[in-house]
Amino acid sequence: MSKTIAAVATGPAAGPIGIIRVSGPQTLAIVDTIFTPQGGGALSERPNRLLTYGALHSRDGKVIDHCLCCVMHAPNSYTGEDMAEIQCHGSPAVLSETLSALFAKGAVQAEPGEFTRRAFLAGKMDLSGAEAVHDLVTAVTTQAAENAAAQLDGVVGTHIFEIRQQLVDLVAEFLAVVDYPDEEIDSHLFDSACEILHRATSELYDMAETYERGRILREGIPCAILGRPNAGKSSLLNALAGVDRAIVTNIPGTTRDVIEETIRIGAVVLRLYDTAGLRDTQDPVEKMGIDRAMKQAQASSLILAVFDSSDHISDDDLMVIARTHGKRTIAVLNKSDLPSELDVQNIQRHFDYVVSVSAKTGEGLQELYDLIPKVVGMDGMSFDGSTITNARQAAALVRAAERCEEAFVAAQLGMTPDAIVMDAEGAIAALGEITGQTVRDDIVSTIFSKFCVGK
Ligand code: GDP
Ligand code: ZN
Image (cartoon, rainbow, N blue to C red; front, top):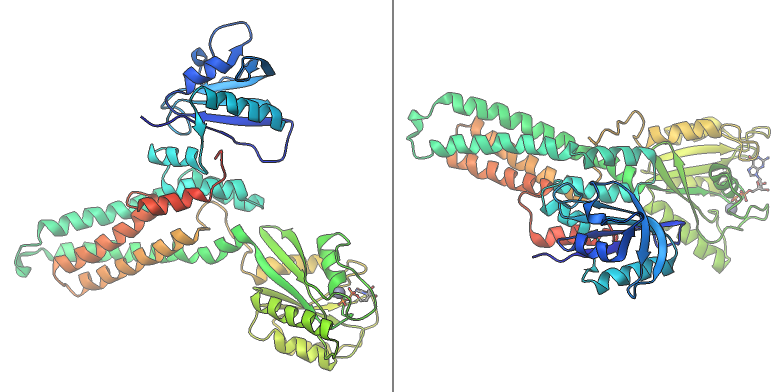
């Protein structure tokens, strides 16, 4: 019999309310001993999911809170087991007293992700749905949450189940004729196999391809602000972030360390790095800062190359241009509030995207905001769950697509059924890793170990 687990489900910071979850066969018996509903009766006899007001007791029977509690009877609960949720006051004192009361009655501390793991094992959700739970807990943007919610609802799982089932049926048909002499096998079988495998291959590649954007949706993108000293990098970071975060001065070389600020632009989370101005210098400390700026630029997916439009292009600017080579870059011509001295056409020759702004007055910032999602390929994206945000799922999709493609080629060449069956089975196994139908235990453990306790 499985153990009854308990954990605080709300964050580590004390909030007004804290939630403790309990799941497992002993749940009802245990919570009945520590919670007495107002007006009498037992909590375990209350209807499913109905919040009940009452007194919460510590392990020595003292009343430590007056709060709300509910039970969810198996199988109609998140984990499929008997569950309870205690919504008490959020102080560490109340939460730890309540937990220790539960432990004293026989519950044990839940491991990270154990509630969701039990839900997965009970068939309440497929593995891709369980992974979406983690995405929902950590979502930074509305769009990321929307996409994860759809995946929790089974958008990915359902699609994969369908494709997988078609392959399973296909394999069954070929296995039925595997011992026939070639000339006795109906050629229609190969035709329909080609059709199914071709469609599955392209659908799987399409899904895998969404990961490039999905990763950005989930993790955001690193974006270095590069430019010569005094171009206005720190001012630009402050203007974009809307706070005076980086130190702005007119003494060149002030920003010697890398300063990070995270901002949201629609669905895009941008991790901005303000860097030391690039220039030829003998100062060893400044040199180190420049070195770090170069590394930051190298590690970034997007570079904002800042130029001072009130000045001519200098050798330092040329160094900036050289550093952005081969990188997704937006040239930001700053100080548009001042008379222009910059050879704009020269800049335009080097960059696909050029925008004029004034970090001082805010002029042109909106244009830059609008441009960024476009440049990173995130404009006009849908967040209906069709975007894969998970590296594990993306890798399995590619493997499945490759095996489908091989099976397709085999079917097209009219090769023996066992060749087709072997590749199709490889694809079936890869797809099963996404849904969790065929996945190794240690992989499942790794997935859930990344969850927080209480989820
Ligand atoms: P950084 O060295 O590239 O980080 O440049 P800063 O952001 O420290 O700015 C250098 C100087 O340029 C400061 O005196 C800023 O006030 C000034 N500056 C920055 N942006 C603008 C702008 O858009 N217009 C004007 N007129 N001055 C600016
Ligand atoms: Zn600076």
